[in-house]
Image (tube, rainbow, N blue to C red; front, top):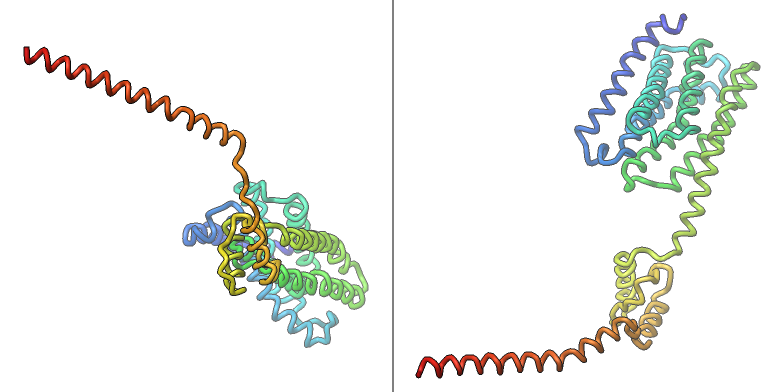
Length: 321
């Protein structure tokens, strides 16, 4: 095929394949705490790299697209060597993630978002090269921007920003995706818009899953947290309210950040004024049994001491005689 004979594609494809392999192993050995503690971290290494490279590389294509009046008519970057190299890099990521996923983290490869998504995009990328319009993919790859945030959050929870991710996802993979599909249809008047439309339902599915996840998180946010964390939050609120009342045990399961300072002080005072919890029947019975056994044990000890003293006296009298 002409695509496989094109040096602007085949050489970047080979180099990109080595980059994928090198990055996967290098980050695990160079930064094991950040990338090699769990399989989940390993599974997101290639996605982190790809989303960073492709989203950043799409900026020049977006500039040309905007400078061209947001039109693909006479688009200057429609078939450039850089567009072919970027497409080659994107294809090597898809194939490398499928390969490493099958070998090292198969349980994390979702049938829809993993196997089907990567296979579909590999075929579409190759067809885009055959049609001689890799620059379209260059514009389209700005949709990898939310994936960059997602990868960072999956590798390290400290970088997880759900609302920022949702906003960027909606603006790129929903709104901008529809704009690109419309422009492809109006500017080319052929089937080029069909590939973008075919993958749009996957983005709708992902966004729906994100909305459901956020609804569940909001519902869980009103539930009690762990004992240690909640007690610390309670203490902070009590101190902020100016009360010197200590934190009772009953406050362990009350979420401090969901009530006001006045309510905190009132709840603490009511908890302290409440009668103590009576001991369990089993513990009470064991306490009575132990108390009843104490006089008997004391009598046995006294009897043993008398026998011991009597034996010593007998032995002393025998020695004196």
